[in-house]
Image (cartoon, rainbow, N blue to C red; front, side, top):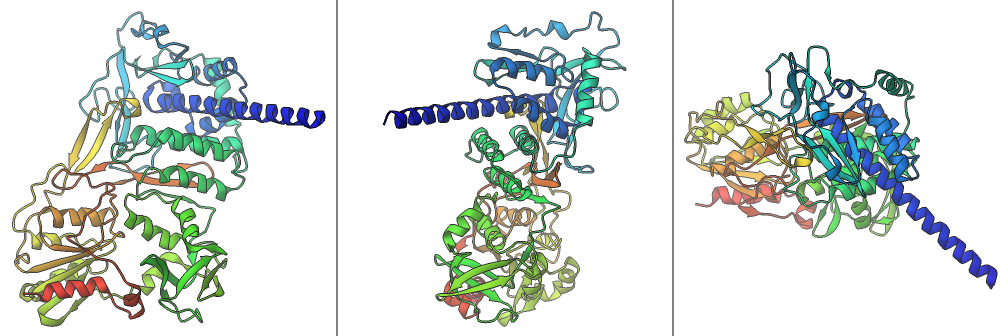
Amino acid sequence: MKNLIHFILAASAFLSFSCKSKNQKLDNITAFTKVYGYVKYFHPSDEAAGIYWDKFAIYGASQIEKCQSREELLATLNQLFKPIAPSIQFASNPSQFDTTLKRIIPDSLNKYGLTYWQHFGLGTGMRENNNAYKSLRVNRDVLEGIRLFNYEVKPSESIIEKIGDDLYCQVPIALYCNEEATFPKANADKLAKLEKELLNTYEFQATDLSFRLGNVINTFNVFQHFYPYFEEVDIDWENAFKTAIEQCYTDATKEDHLITLQKLTAHLADGHITISNKYIKNHYMPAITWEWIEGQLVITYVDSSVPKLHVGDIVTHINKQKANLYFDHIKEKISAGTTGWLNARANILSLTGKKNSSISIETNNKSYSLKRTDYYWKFLKKINQKPSYQALDNGIWYLNLDKVEMDTIRYLLPQLSESSAIICDLRGYPNDNHEFIQYLMAIDDTTSSWMQVPKIVYADHEKVVGYSHFNWIKMMKAKKPHLGNKKIIFIIDGRAISYAESYMAFIEGYRLATIIGQPTAGTNGNVNEFKLPGGYKIRWTGMKVLKHDGSQLHGVGIIPDILLEKSILGVINGQDEFLNKALELAKTP
């Protein structure tokens, strides 16, 4: 009994130590992560601007991960950041910092100017040739006096933030500079040593812990400082980050790491977010489709190459797991602003996988193994049998805005002018045909500020200094023949995202039609994009977009005047119940 007690006590002590060690590592990585973002995006030194930040995140994580005490953490932070941010300071209390920053003022200001970061959205580290977003250091990256927007940072401004228990950092966000360099200059030997370490950093793989940590650190900071919708989504972003860091310790493959990044960004509720890896080809599906209708997973399409399954069959299990639980795991990886977009994405991702891999399903108490043979995008496009346009009964016309080209709409204008009603189907993505809206408008567009790009010079979204407003006023002029003097009905659902919501914002804002169906995706704004080591790529929304009345679009979407739901019986009978409702409305006097 005594030996058993000793074993239990020893085991408890070990678990306690392991827990403390784990928490200490997490706190250390969190501290490094915060400083990493402050220096990368807001400290304007030449040394920081010249660093390969992706490798720095990985190398820095590998060094921080070794720290066993606060003293080691502090020494490592100085070792990592002093060569690229020589004016950075760390202290146990913010009162210890010199807020005048006299230490970084040259003895003579002759021929010195001031440099600081300006971010119009985010350009640093993002995809090149993205004209919507830019970042620059004033008086450094471009000709003297050139700015992205009219705002000046004062010489004494700095970031003073808590980065851990009894640990703070001070990072100047403005530095003096001349034609040669920013001031103060870093220690040349220490900078050269750091650059050599980064140069010798081998091509990390997903099997390396520091690789995974570095990618999560990078991803966290992009959104921490530049995601425009934190006010609209209720999330604890730092806690989501810590969960992702913990997952890094157990991930073992590039697929594991992809899932961790997906689960992290799913918290942001941004329907534009997609994370891919060029080495992971998981875009194939079996020749069926399904969706949840009346609380059950219903097969909605079956190709002739798939025997024994039928439209309307209820799927109860997927890969020997209850269908609802299987979908719960899928949805954890999807970033979505509305339930409609979440469900639309889950319907596809629940079927996709590697080419020729199998997925097992159970329906009618029988099991079936289906092979994924079709590239999902081509398959979904192939089975979309809805016509581009069609003349229906009683002088009613149908326009499938997902397919019909604008040239075709112009050709149809005489017939549309004579129609009694026009049904517009926007359960998807417009085919560059927004000019059609102009024929519905009685007056020219006057909405001037529904697209907004943030102007950022401060970290952590603490003080966005303003927004640049954009619109479609120049191109949205009312045109003849005017088609808005007849019944116009728009059909929408959760698949309508981005450009489709710009389209629908005009329809809703100017009351140009009766809208039926389900809410749209609640995600709009030009997409931004960045790459991570290991072949990973992340797309996200870089600007804020509102409805035309100034109210929130993100996470809300365009709400139909008449909400509709599909029925299992309708699917079995091959009925488009949304279109049927539109026809009913069109025929009603």
